[in-house]
Length: 185
Image (cartoon, rainbow, N blue to C red; front, top):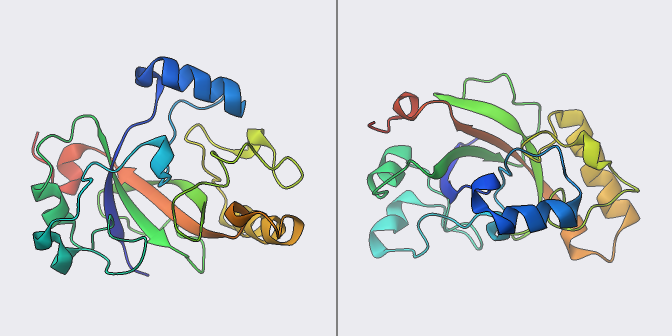
């Protein structure tokens, strides 16, 4: 399993009306923050792929925002105070919540469409025939790997016509304290 890194803007109550409208629309009243790779629910902090990034990023379609080198990613960020610095594993084949995340804390599993752009959990209006909103954590993630696999399978079987239902599982962890993942205070 390979750790990938990404810096995302936070999506939480500090977003004011945008947050309030999202909670009303989604019905996810338990959320304290959405921690996701979904680009509509918190854009990436580094919006443009610079030439100097190429040796340090995943060189695949839809993956140019993911860095393989945490130190390099951190060196490109002027200010990390309002960002989520995430470590992720794409398509984990087993439960990874208890592995050593190296200064990051495991938050849960997200299910994102094939492009990794839309979360089936928090940005598709819900799939009540597959999972209940109450199953999502305060971050909008599924805490249990086996349940994430089950949801992934059910989405594909029950909604074959919905492109966001053809999704991959992503394990998501966040920097525990800025100094623990190499970010100077």
